[in-house]
Length: 484
Image (tube, rainbow, N blue to C red):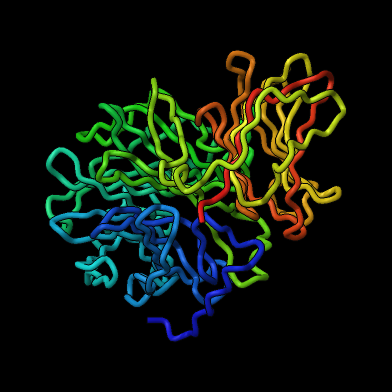
């Protein structure tokens, strides 16, 4: 165990601290790890540096919940205390419940930088005992894969055997290796998911955080390319998260994709991982931040938050994301409006509709306008704008007028856009505001857009609707506040 002093958990009344999103208690947190349901609770582990608010020696932080919304901080699950993980620490991985025990597999990074896949086991979900040696060592690398880019194992059971995906690269082309085991001790390489020339996505570098789930005979593969390149309205972040629908061949290891796309169009979404729940749902979390950015919360003693739980379904190969039922049930409807005109050039603020911790369900009818939308978290000139360009059929989100700016090494950290069509002349938006957080579900979850938005202070809670180039209208508007 590292003898350095851990940071003291910061106060929950921090104005940037989300109310109903999971966040680290103090220090630094990134990728969610080991999502699983075990002994009556949902467990989420995460990449954690408990000593500082920047990335550092990786531990596995741990929190648990019985409703996916309210989280209890638990003791650190994994410390970098073995010869094979005393370098950069215990990197990302996954969990599997088997025979009444909880197994976690993670990447151990040694002092020489080599990355190997390591296992630990728990009978109570709190205390873990590590295996003495890695289960997938450096001697089991795919041909051409580097020792220092071989990580983020995803463990699952299918067709009578344990399987494990591991992210890697061959040259600069990202790839994913598939391994097989009969006993969770000895593994063998089955093959590579993609051909040598890559998977067809405009990317370079390792495929981080691979994950896979089955939907009615079709596989959903999720991973986070280390470097992506903009392609139209997709991949606006230097690092993105994508999905592929198709089929994994367990004999060859090859993945045959029928469709692929970016999972979220926002500026703050990475390292998604999902879990299959006992009731049959597949629920996903992701890191609600982005690499290479300033994090305003770090000055307050913490850095790292996570998206709302999202239920995943696949329709015709297309990923659909919806707020988990627990998230929807945690809100109470407080106001309901219909057929409100938005005259061109006039800011419309329905009576009583304001706040920075809330849910808004909006049906916008652009009519004859060229653009229409909403200004949120308004205080003076400070606001975040969400607006729809009718001609381009694109939903924009712009945080450049916020009081606390987020800077980064990508070309534009303030504006993000997502393709969005109208359905019967209406755009459907489901918006979750949580102090410094905004998640938007577009047209029933066909697209999503996640963005951190930090106001100057807690007085930034105004909401205004606007229209440009003609009149528009609010077909319907529902405002919800958290229960309790």
